[in-house]
Image (cartoon, rainbow, N blue to C red; front, side, top):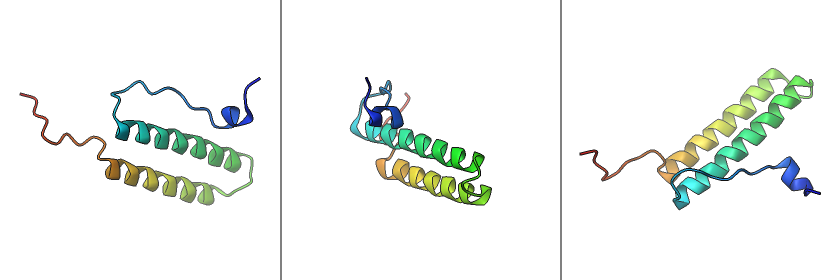
Length: 82
């Protein structure tokens, strides 16, 4: 029997280049996806308004973008393609 938290918060293995910042961002991305899914379900079932859902997902997206920026994901400093 699986744990309740494993069911509610599934975590999948990371398959990219293993660096601490990539692993942290992957965890943040999975958390974003999980929370966005919950928000969509709440809106679909009429528990929150479409505007509320939009604002919540917008905030989550902003947090994810800040995480990406702070972790320097996608920046290729000092790596030439020569």
